[in-house]
Length: 117
Image (cartoon, rainbow, N blue to C red; front, side):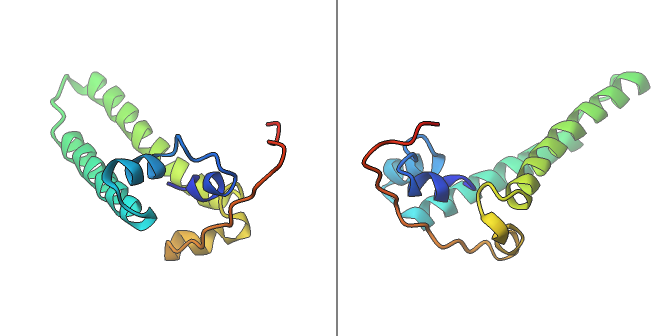
Protein backbone atom coordinates (compact mmCIF):
# COMPACT_ATOMS: atom_id res chain seq x y z
CA UNK A 1 0.00 0.00 0.00
CA UNK A 2 2.64 2.53 1.02
CA UNK A 3 4.62 2.14 -2.21
CA UNK A 4 1.61 2.52 -4.51
CA UNK A 5 1.81 6.29 -4.96
CA UNK A 6 5.44 6.43 -6.07
CA UNK A 7 5.04 3.31 -8.20
CA UNK A 8 1.93 4.57 -9.99
CA UNK A 9 3.62 7.92 -10.59
CA UNK A 10 6.47 6.27 -12.47
CA UNK A 11 4.21 3.76 -14.24
CA UNK A 12 5.63 0.81 -12.32
CA UNK A 13 2.55 -0.27 -10.37
CA UNK A 14 1.52 -3.38 -12.30
CA UNK A 15 2.79 -5.67 -9.54
CA UNK A 16 1.44 -3.56 -6.66
CA UNK A 17 -1.35 -5.12 -4.60
CA UNK A 18 -3.42 -1.94 -4.96
CA UNK A 19 -3.37 -2.18 -8.76
CA UNK A 20 -4.08 -5.90 -8.65
CA UNK A 21 -7.09 -5.43 -6.36
CA UNK A 22 -8.35 -2.54 -8.51
CA UNK A 23 -8.31 -4.74 -11.60
CA UNK A 24 -9.59 -7.90 -9.92
CA UNK A 25 -12.55 -6.26 -8.16
CA UNK A 26 -13.10 -3.44 -10.67
CA UNK A 27 -12.74 -0.74 -8.00
CA UNK A 28 -10.94 2.59 -7.84
CA UNK A 29 -7.87 3.35 -5.72
CA UNK A 30 -9.90 4.07 -2.59
CA UNK A 31 -11.97 0.92 -3.06
CA UNK A 32 -8.79 -1.12 -3.35
CA UNK A 33 -7.25 0.55 -0.30
CA UNK A 34 -10.42 -0.17 1.71
CA UNK A 35 -10.42 -3.85 0.70
CA UNK A 36 -6.73 -4.23 1.49
CA UNK A 37 -7.13 -2.47 4.85
CA UNK A 38 -9.99 -4.83 5.77
CA UNK A 39 -7.90 -7.82 4.74
CA UNK A 40 -4.93 -6.55 6.74
CA UNK A 41 -7.11 -6.03 9.82
CA UNK A 42 -8.52 -9.56 9.55
CA UNK A 43 -4.98 -10.97 9.28
CA UNK A 44 -3.81 -8.95 12.29
CA UNK A 45 -6.83 -10.10 14.32
CA UNK A 46 -6.22 -13.70 13.27
CA UNK A 47 -2.54 -13.42 14.23
CA UNK A 48 -3.44 -12.16 17.72
CA UNK A 49 -6.19 -14.76 18.17
CA UNK A 50 -3.83 -17.57 17.22
CA UNK A 51 -1.07 -16.09 19.37
CA UNK A 52 -3.38 -16.27 22.38
CA UNK A 53 -4.26 -19.91 21.57
CA UNK A 54 -0.69 -21.20 21.45
CA UNK A 55 -0.35 -24.51 23.28
CA UNK A 56 2.31 -25.08 25.89
CA UNK A 57 5.39 -27.19 25.23
CA UNK A 58 7.04 -26.51 28.55
CA UNK A 59 8.74 -23.44 29.97
CA UNK A 60 11.89 -23.51 27.82
CA UNK A 61 10.16 -24.10 24.48
CA UNK A 62 7.34 -21.69 25.37
CA UNK A 63 9.89 -18.92 25.94
CA UNK A 64 11.51 -19.59 22.56
CA UNK A 65 8.17 -19.69 20.75
CA UNK A 66 7.09 -16.49 22.52
CA UNK A 67 10.25 -14.71 21.40
CA UNK A 68 9.86 -15.96 17.83
CA UNK A 69 6.19 -14.94 17.53
CA UNK A 70 6.89 -11.53 19.05
CA UNK A 71 9.68 -11.12 16.51
CA UNK A 72 7.25 -11.76 13.67
CA UNK A 73 4.82 -9.18 15.07
CA UNK A 74 7.61 -6.67 15.65
CA UNK A 75 8.89 -7.14 12.10
CA UNK A 76 5.49 -6.25 10.64
CA UNK A 77 5.12 -3.21 12.89
CA UNK A 78 8.71 -2.06 12.28
CA UNK A 79 8.19 -2.25 8.52
CA UNK A 80 5.09 -0.07 8.87
CA UNK A 81 6.96 2.47 11.03
CA UNK A 82 9.93 2.57 8.64
CA UNK A 83 7.64 3.27 5.69
CA UNK A 84 6.51 6.52 7.31
CA UNK A 85 9.73 7.50 9.11
CA UNK A 86 11.98 7.14 6.07
CA UNK A 87 11.49 9.51 3.16
CA UNK A 88 11.19 6.73 0.60
CA UNK A 89 7.44 6.85 0.05
CA UNK A 90 6.19 10.12 1.53
CA UNK A 91 9.18 12.45 1.54
CA UNK A 92 9.15 14.79 4.52
CA UNK A 93 5.40 14.24 5.07
CA UNK A 94 5.60 10.70 6.41
CA UNK A 95 4.64 11.42 10.01
CA UNK A 96 1.71 13.60 8.98
CA UNK A 97 0.47 10.96 6.52
CA UNK A 98 0.91 8.24 9.13
CA UNK A 99 -1.55 10.13 11.35
CA UNK A 100 -4.04 11.35 8.75
CA UNK A 101 -3.79 8.47 6.25
CA UNK A 102 -4.49 11.03 3.49
CA UNK A 103 -2.23 10.92 0.45
CA UNK A 104 -2.44 13.09 -2.64
CA UNK A 105 -1.58 11.02 -5.68
CA UNK A 106 1.52 12.13 -7.51
CA UNK A 107 1.16 12.88 -11.22
CA UNK A 108 2.37 10.20 -13.60
CA UNK A 109 5.79 10.94 -14.98
CA UNK A 110 6.14 10.11 -18.64
CA UNK A 111 9.69 9.52 -19.69
CA UNK A 112 10.79 9.19 -23.27
CA UNK A 113 13.54 6.93 -22.03
CA UNK A 114 12.90 4.57 -19.12
CA UNK A 115 15.10 5.28 -16.13
CA UNK A 116 17.81 2.73 -15.42
CA UNK A 117 17.46 1.45 -11.89
